[in-house]
Length: 208
Image (cartoon, rainbow, N blue to C red):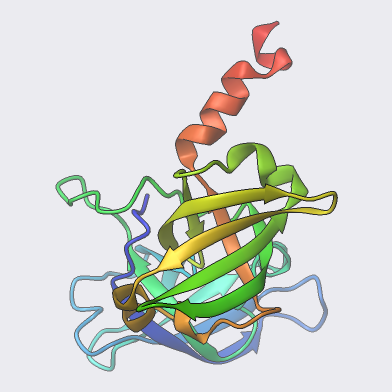
């Protein structure tokens, strides 16, 4: 379980195939900030751009670790198949502050940035979410974009997608990788955990 509050920005330095064809996944090597892994052990969970992964190799002194990601996970996420900067969050402890919202680390869909531009001291981020996620997105509701807990400021339904508008304050731009986004960027989305259960409870199948 996570909160969507990014605790460090790392970098995928290497992606190594785990087999000889597309049915195999990859081993990712990630460089973390100095000291970031001092309280991490092999087998711990760390979210990479919002996707929960298990630490399979660890070198805390050198601040790097590895995860194995399946072909299925690669197909359902964005930004985990090549070297580059990445948002990191360690798993939530029972006594931690819940600064964002409850996040499972399971990507529900891939969105596409439709607009990203400065507005005053902040930035407006618009993302086209898959149409099937529209029922989970609401004004002032929570959503996770590349692992970052954010508040939805506007929802616009279209025939092909559901566009959400989000305001990013300077702190978010400085402390995450979201400042690297541009129109056309693909991002990992996770809907609010509570919305997921409400939808299930109100569905006709749950009432039978």
